[in-house]
Length: 155
Image 1 (cartoon, one colour):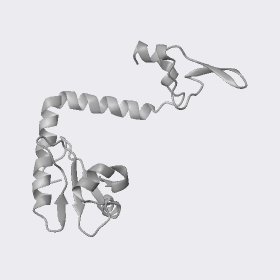
Image 2: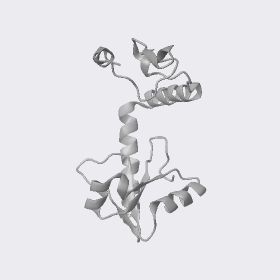
Image 3: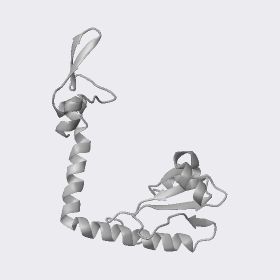
Image 4: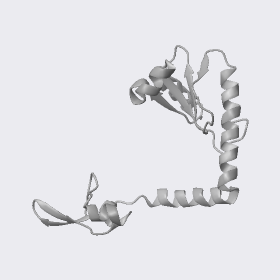
């Protein structure tokens, strides 16, 4: 949290008893430091999980993790592009490790539900959530797949 943000008097969208002191029935005084943007409820399990993930990534090496994830995504794009009824939507000179694909005649949300039943993690995006991009690509919905450096090529 920068001093500039704190000095500007910026407030979070939601504030609770960690971020402010309730001074009178209809007023509060925000904390002067970054606690202003913290919540009283704290997800300790998520923080521990983030720490474990960071240690794992550092053990592999951040650059190597990125290289591996992009390589898996390239392989996935090639396999999907060679499959009838699928259209890979990713464009650009340098692609990230998120793969988007349109499934002809199917709503991506239904496809994602089926993939999840099979133990495959995916998400859907819809035209209304990325109007300019989806309009340019002529797609209504798309499945988003994110191979990660810890995935195998078979996965």
